[in-house]
Image (cartoon, rainbow, N blue to C red; front, side, top):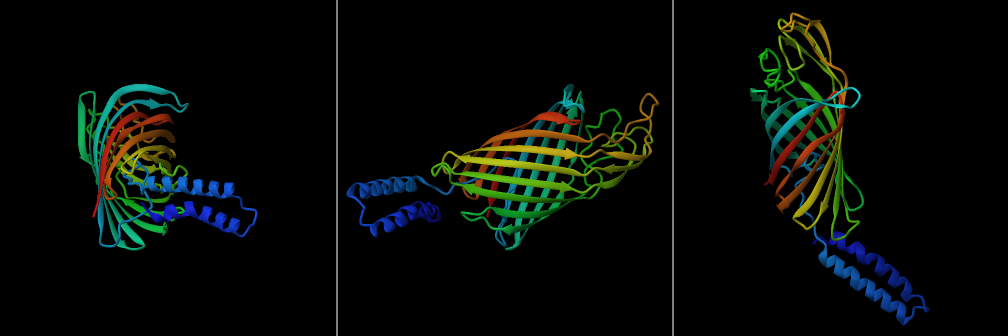
Amino acid sequence: MNLKYILPLFMSFTLAYGQERDTPSLSPAQLEQHLIQAEKNFEIAEKMFDPYYTGPLLAPGVTIPDPGHVAIQPYLFYTDTYGVYDGEGHSHHIPHIHSTEGDFLLFAGLTKWMGLQVNLGYVHNSQSGHSGSNWKDPSITLLFPLLKEKPYRPGLLFGVRESFPAGKYQHLDPDKGGVDATGSGAYRTSFFFNIAKLVWSIPTHPMRFRLSTQYALPYHVKVHDFNAFGGGFNTNGTVRLPHSFSADFGYELSFTQKWAFALDVVYEYNSSVTFSGFSGLDRCCMCADVGGPFSERLSLAPAIEYSVHDSFGFIAGPWFSVWGKNSGNFISGVFSFYVSW
């Protein structure tokens, strides 16, 4: 139990009682009421605790490990993409795309004001009897805590991420319908800003709120043949990938010090993907499509988390889309654990 959260409960009583002591009109009944309230506050304080949190499932935090310390957080996703939203927001059924993804996140404290995050991932996709597996695009992120969280102010963090083109994105198998694509083919820079606050509105069930916003710069990539953005036989040209923006609101409610409920509300937006060059030919000797319109999507990710202590915990739950335009309609099962030392 942390005294910095208990003391404010008694300060109001102490100040009020001190003022009343100087007032001759204080009656025995009033004094008894003050004592009863103080006893209630003490009972609440005895039940309070510093919550352990592992989540929420998707929204990142605002802290970094201390210099010389590291943390890891592996993720396992199993996703079924069973539909596509059109430009009017209506979902249409497609042959199911099943994806199994493993992501590995490593965090390290470099200094008190800068941390490092490394993301590595591998994915296996399958659809209609065809499948493909390969590495995803890895990334390196520099993390800069701007403000440390305190009882009456939130924590703030700024980050810069660079992704690298390690995943497969072109010269795809024309018989697999794109399930063997696992990367974007280019370096990409993203910026994000996170805010977090622990709230004690219910003293015995603290809550934590997070908000993470991310913006990714547009970029160009040369593509040939069947690729992650469309294409066909003899495609040769340049794809301009879009601006993209995402916002993730995360919420956690503690049942006990170790058990908590978490929820992510995620919004994603991507501007249109354009192409210049020869688009190639499809199997019917017609011009192939490369690129596509803007897309947006809203998704939810409720979860249950169990933290053994403040440096080791587990979290699991579903993640699913609820609305979108020109984007996939999906449901995913997610499992992760966090360890720091």
